Image (cartoon, rainbow, N blue to C red; front, side, top):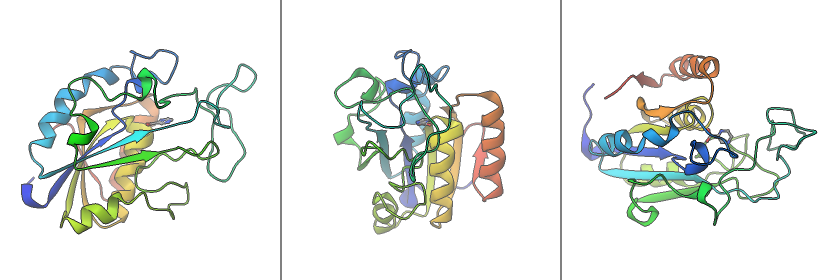
Length: 206
Ligand code: VGL
């Protein structure tokens, strides 16, 4: 694949400790703590580097409880299933993986899921209907970016949705699986199929 650095951005989707075995009570994605090096590698092919971070309140209404466990359905316009509380600002789970740049060293940062009754997956919109922009699409377009290389956590949720949103916004999108980890084998398989169906390029590595 011919990638022109001038027009390419690298997108680190939710590379936070709350999605790794470092935080076993949050959403530990197997080997999620192994993606910093491949994310740094893919960023060398891009002029612009952006990051998204989940930033959830500990009181979120979609939180899983003993009676209503993770993956059970939850009512609400902007949430679908319950999750363990994860990535609360001020806790270890909110932190970026060690060896990634500091947030301030990225060109643009997205914070998402801040409202207690909203749990978006994609980094491009605050709502599930994809109508309230987080601004990252507009930022990338203002920089003349045409291609986005995506990696992060988790392949089957936030990476998938972000990649599809970027594709639908008109970018060439490359998902670099070497810089992603997923929650579950079957949902990762489905996610790869879904991404390919929308025209996302899914590569084992770059
Ligand atoms: C994610 C599940 C719940 C993700 C976030 O970042 O992929 N997955 N919240």
